[in-house]
Length: 404
Image 1 (cartoon, rainbow, N blue to C red):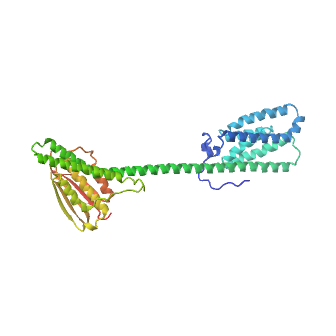
Image 2 (spheres, one colour):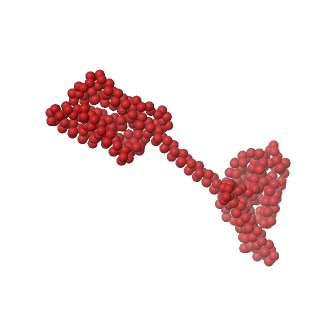
Image 3 (cartoon, rainbow, N blue to C red):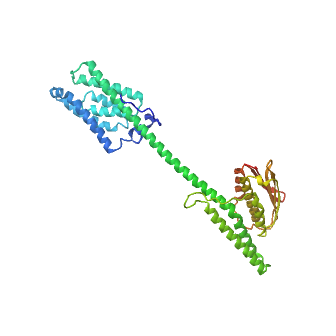
């Protein structure tokens, strides 16, 4: 019996798949026209060889014997086409027919091998035993007396064992190829998912960076432009000064936009082009930048040993101060924004930003996602964030670990 592969990564049960379309591993190479022609041609050759062994008997037998053989042969070749829909039943039926017809031997062999390719051992054993019994019955029916009974039995057992073993080998090989194909398709799908996730992460990173960098500048431009629309008491010099500030902020926003888009990829090397990120040391400059746009800010910096603060914590704190002040100026224009900062390597960094409520109309429209973004940034840095109204003030409190 031919050796069968022992590695079968995916084990498919024929009882679960026998009625499905011919796309299972044992049927994968059976759907081609060339493969089908080869199978039927092989079955015809087997039928012809068996018929040659009994041709002399049929010449001397009554006329209905060769006629019955011919009819059963036609029926067998017609029925074997349905072997994939009802493999076990077709195989047993053709084995019974082959007891009385030499021409049915080929279709019976094809149907038996088809059952063996499914590698369901009880069915394989059953069909094999029925083949042996029907082969012996055929020899008795056709009065084949060239060999003794035991020799004839031994030859039939050997041939049928090899036939069923070959079918199991073919089925094992098909399952192996099918499982490898599934693995390749799965690997390709996973690669596409990883690529899509990487693209999504990159887009989210760029969107977060654009929001952090541009939101406060655009809001400043909006508030300054809005002030110019209703301040009738400004002199020409003051108008020019405010227009210059608007132009400066707009140019800075354009420069920041170019810088953010520049972090995508270098055209030649394909490497990320991350620009230097802000740290806690840049917070005083940020406060002065806000004050330059007529923002009312107080900044109480009581941070100890700021030089030892990690870059991650410093960058997160910078972005939180930037977003908190921008939100305060949007929703409470004209109010004084108080920024308090304290911390040490042992206690971490604590930020408190608060401002009075009810100062005029909203200066600039917002998406309502500023606080959501701050909470997400605090969580990513390993810290906490709380916000809400306390008496007549809106208070934002943040704690960040000194070193995440």
